[in-house]
Image (cartoon, rainbow, N blue to C red; front, side):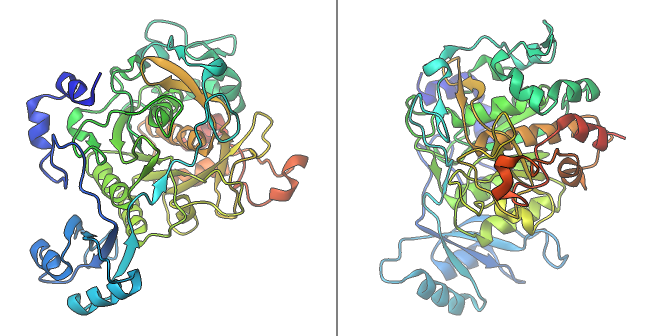
Length: 449
């Protein structure tokens, strides 16, 4: 089924009309305008969108003036710049600074982010693993079923909707956590900023936010439908990530936002816009199972701004087996409300692929995690991208109890983790695997008082 056909099935005319408000995209277009570079301009008294666009020769993509003069949030505009063949990044920044009368930084934009997981079918490690070597038909029902609507979810320690994950969920003590947090994330919205999801998958029926909150910054419309071919690029990545969140917090709502194309890469400007969009449209938790080696003023400002509004941001650490983690996870060392997540195997040993660092806050099992896959199927993926939504789901599970504040919640999650430094195989990574492996039951106990 084509994306346009899906749009006709899912989106009423009112949604298409609403999407024009507050969005830099034009609904119905085949793709969004892309820029090679962006700049973030600190706003001053008297600035307007028109004046900034005239001075830069670019297009204002985000305009954040709510934090001006308060010391909180952002007070800046992100501008997409036309191709500059005669000027390097530094020279362009200097030219713009003279025009604007203030310092600015020019950043690389196109394909700055990626999912980090390679997608060779049937391979392990930091790769997608089709269940049993191939896709299998999804039999887990909808999130209503997961939440006990028509069958027992836990039976003798087996997670019946996705029994393949029973060992993983036992490792993080999910059954006990769900018994303690019986609202199962109800009333909490988790924004999945990713490759989109399969909007027609039975696992997501009744589990998504209102379509007026959806966005597709790749397609330039409001239908964040996964597109691609099995075994190639990032196809199925966002569907898997969203499915993991819902297994941990079955009654949470997923806000699907597409910023990555079918090859698993996406623009910096799309990620920044998506972060602001998610917070503006009711997200309590934002999951970013993506990364870049590029330290970005624009991304950092966006995360700082939404964190000031008590939106929690969870991000994967990257899959290069390096002693440093990718951005935006690396901002967890500097910003409140940001959680960086790495991966361990079933024995709590650091996954071969997982990055590690003193800035890493926590680890979760990230190998062969089963979840929905496009076209009504199920598949398993491995990578820190699978670790991040487990932590995001845990935060949603706690927040859903209704008497839990977002302030300090990440500290309670990391403080209740089980240390993995004492494991012999982790000897070379001591102090660089965060506070340990996520224990959802202990976290819920600490959070819900």
